[in-house]
Amino acid sequence: MKVAFLSVGLGALLLLTGCATTPKAARIPLTGDPLVDGRTHIEQGPPNERILWQYRTALVAMRRGDYPQAKALLDDAILTIGGILTNDKDARRARSMFASESRKKFIGEPYERVMAYYYRGILYWMDGEPDNARACFRSGELIDSDTEVDNYAADYVLLDYLDGFASDKLFTDGGDALKRAKANASTKMDVPPDYDRAANVLFFTECGFGPQKYATGQYREQLRFREGQQQARVVTIKLNNGQVIRTRPWDDLYFQATTRGGRVMDHILANKAVFKQSTDTVGDVAIVSGAVLATGRNTQEAGLGVLAFGLLSKAIAAGTTPAADVRAWDNLPQFLGFGALRVAPGTYTAQVEFQDGAGRLLANLSRRVTFEVKAADRDTVVYISDKQQ
Image (tube, rainbow, N blue to C red; front, top):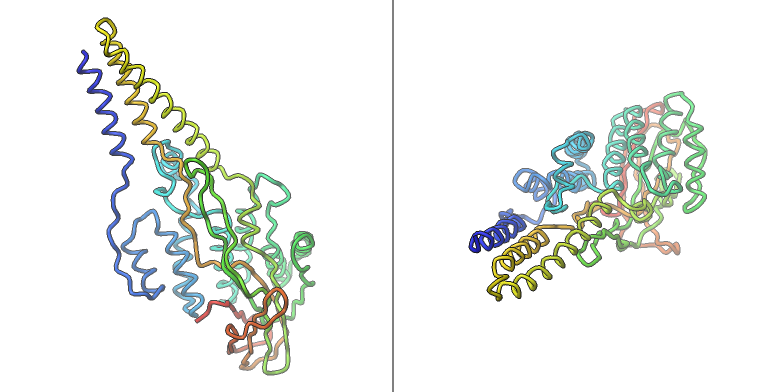
């Protein structure tokens, strides 16, 4: 009986400690080319990080002008994140006391999922499908509508603005969306202009580096964000026909990441942290008490039982993994801008200049872009990033 008690405790300790050990991932060969390496991670990397690498690689493809590849990657990611909430098995696993959050299937924080739909919307509009683009922008709005603080629910200026602009292009009323965009912008960013349905060249601009994730707390159970490095904030686009447009940031992804209130997973991780601390403390007390009791002739059997219980509690505490998931879509921008012009059909060269918040020119980021306006009644979409190659 004495041996059985001790064996149970030691067996549980070994079993649960073993379960808490993360298997070593196989090394993935890298070339230094983010597009090639991204595809390699998607094909050979852990399945639970497939969406993360689809996000990252799609954005690399967009910045290189490889729009077909960006569309394919985003379509696959969106198909998965659109159905993830109905996957009971994954949901149970994510909420398990013994499942590390970093081992669950990555779908991203709300701002990351919003950006997947945002980029897909740009690509739809680029293909002459403003109706599908609008559906993507509305999906982003829906993702951002679930916040603990109502003031920050569905408050992306650009998503509302583009929702209404696409509606206006489709000859339906986009006035309500425009009102929402202006109301949200009035508190933190420039107020966007009224729609010009005849504007046929749309400039989507982005600058800076997106929010970075880190974990705090005794067990690293609290997910936090720090602002990414940024220089550029304003984009000035000078066409060779004399037209000039300046896009200022309408949305700030750091603001979006840090104003949503607590996540559902934050509460789960907080419970895990309390559970881990409590069971660990109980285990310490039981082991000491059991060891003392086990030295007595009349209390030896009871002492071994308490000792086994203490070992079991320590094993359970060791197997509880409350650490927050700090995996991130780490090549996102910080600032999002937009502008539209009426331009006659033809081929154009534009000088693109980036300025910082004080209006100083960042000459190292200046570049030229060329685009073609095929028809006045069909929109031409120009995507501009300070990280384009």
